[in-house]
Structures are given as structure tokens and as C-alpha cells.
Length: 270
Image (cartoon, rainbow, N blue to C red; front, side, top):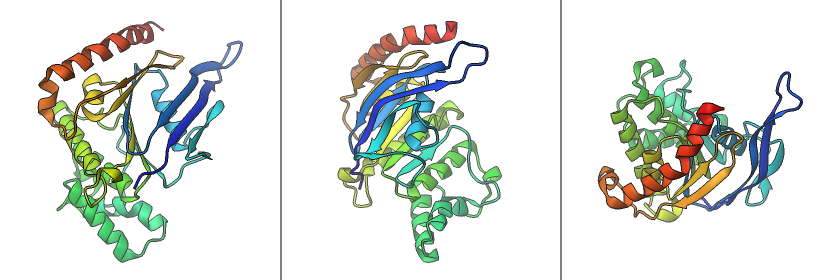
């Protein structure tokens, strides 16, 4: 069960700037607390450092200042308590679907029988049954992302980090993947308990996607990025596509469009 509180405290990120007087500030001091089991979307224009913030939480990048902690323990690098799914297809091409899903389990030294049982469970949950022995090149984009999601979930991380994982998919496949992710998150642990829900940080630039999935939407400003708004999404779970047609959904969409429209214009002109 997810029990750890994620705390982002005063995190900034600067990058060297060739020919400039000093480093370029990409991310302004950022503070964010994410409670266990929350589904938080980070919404912002291109270049606002939302993916960089996610990579810092993952331990794949280091902040220039500030720190990230899980229940007070500093994040200093990647760890099994955080699972990452990227926009690009990051499956190992020399491994089958089942082998990709089992990769982290094998690295942890789990017995073969336990690896097979866990992989089979997530193959079934992500609709990949029958494709266990296929190579990534034999899969569609949506199926590859289902495999990447299954691989991340199989390691049972405390926090699931998703960096625009459906951004390269066609519209219909993207919506199906949103529903699949939400179904898995809503189910929580194998007992179906909401208390077992993973903590999720989901980076996107799609307003509809952020509302449909999350119970909070963090709006980032144009670079140098900062948290401009923290918007609760009081829509009930479970959710399906019909929620996108409701007046409540439309009202939230209008609110978020108002928050982000100016930032997108700034990013385009910078």
C-alpha cells in the first residue's frame, strides 16, 4: 500500500547557458506536498520544466537547490519506490513482453516462479494476454505503453511517475489508455481497496486528460516554471468517458484554460 508522503521543498533547477552572464533559471523555487494515494496532474506549456520536476522526483536529475523527500527521507537517486513511464517507447527491444515486465523483478533477485506470477497478473490487467512472447517491434504504440505501464506496476512502487505517456498515441488509443490507467488506479491493491491506490504524478499538456484522471491539477507557468495554481478536481470516482460531457467537467476545463492560456502564449513568444 502507498503510505509515503511526497514533499517537494524549495526545488529549483538551473542550466548552464553558453555565452550568457550566468546559468539559465528553468524552475523557480517549487513547493508541493502529495499525500499517499493522490492522483496529481502537472499541467503546463512546453518548456515549463514540468518533465524536469518529474525527473527530479524520480532521482534521474538533481535540483540546483531544495530537496525532494519521501516521508522525510531525501531522494538522492532512482529507487524501486518510484516507477517511471516515459512518453517515448522505452521497452528493451531484445526482450519479449513478459521479459520486459519481469526485468525489474529479476534485477531484485525474486524467485523465477514469483516473477512469472507477478508478470502474468499485470499482463492480464493491462490486456496483453496472448502477447507474452511478442517482441516490442510487433506491438502497436498503445500496446507498447501498456507493457511499459505493466513493467512499472509490477515492481510495486510507492509512487508512479508518468511523463506524457500517451502523448504519441492517436486520439482513440489515448482515451482507451486513460481509461485503463484510471481503472488500475481506482482498483487500488488486489483486494480492490482504495487505501491501496498508488500515488501518481502525471505530466501532461492536455487539459481534458488532466481533469479526467486527476483529483488535483497543478498548473505550471511558462519558463522559468513555477506553480501558478493548485486546482482540486471534485469529480467522483469511478469515472468514464461520459464525465467529459458534463457541465461540471466543462466548468473545470474553462477554469484551467483561463489559468494556462496566458502561459502558453508566453511560452510561444519566449
